[in-house]
Image (tube, rainbow, N blue to C red; front, top):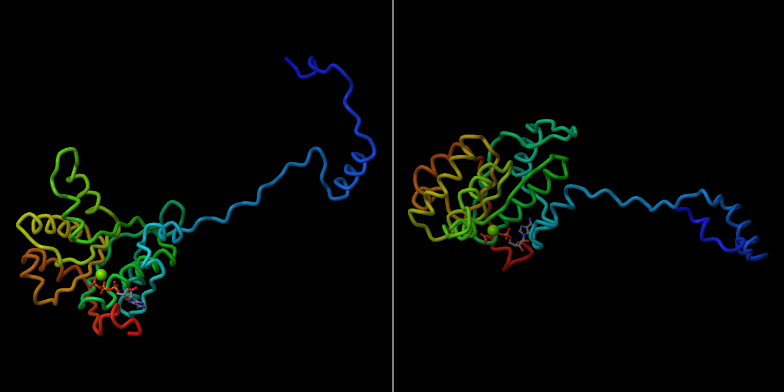
Length: 233
Ligand SMILES: Nc1ncnc2c1ncn2[C@@H]1O[C@H](COP(=O)(O)OP(=O)(O)OP(=O)(O)O)[C@@H](O)[C@H]1O
Ligand SMILES: [Mg+2]
């Protein structure tokens, strides 16, 4: 069925105003065949996508520590080219950022993730505090905690924040061991922050975890006052 069947009279002539409007539009290069073009949206960068997942407090974090920056450079250089040409994260050293409360460990860790994204590294990453890890993976019905553990263990970049701060048990020790051991064996870059001095890692995390961390991580020690209480630090 065509539209012609419904025409009961000649097209309506609207006269001089329509003629003038037509002339103006023609002058501007707009005719019946012209299609409207929506302005293209700005491309969404990986950093913008990541910003949505970074906790608001650390969304503008910049690494200003030379050892953290050096680690970012090392991981960027080691990146394998992916299908779209951008380097993807691959095997590499991990980074342990240690220091007392409020010295900026989490800030440096998110700053490192942001710096990798800014450098154009294609990055799948996860971030979790050790306390949240234990709470999330607690065995309960209807939840596949083994699958969740595997996802974190295999993720190309993992930020494990505040390791050693949560209450420990045999179960948390085993879980930490399995997570760290997987990342250790597969040389998966891992950012770890801790309040514990190196000497206390073994007591808090067990010797198997502490020994692996000693081999797999480069260490950055932050000091100074608690920046929360002394923001100008
Ligand atoms: N280099 C920095 N420049 C500006 N602000 C910073 C810097 N480092 C940390 N901060 C700010 O200082 C506060 C404490 O930082 P952060 O949370 O990273 O400390 P932390 O060492 O992880 O503490 P905790 O051990 O309690 O987890 C935050 O408000 C953070 O935004
Ligand atoms: Mg922290």
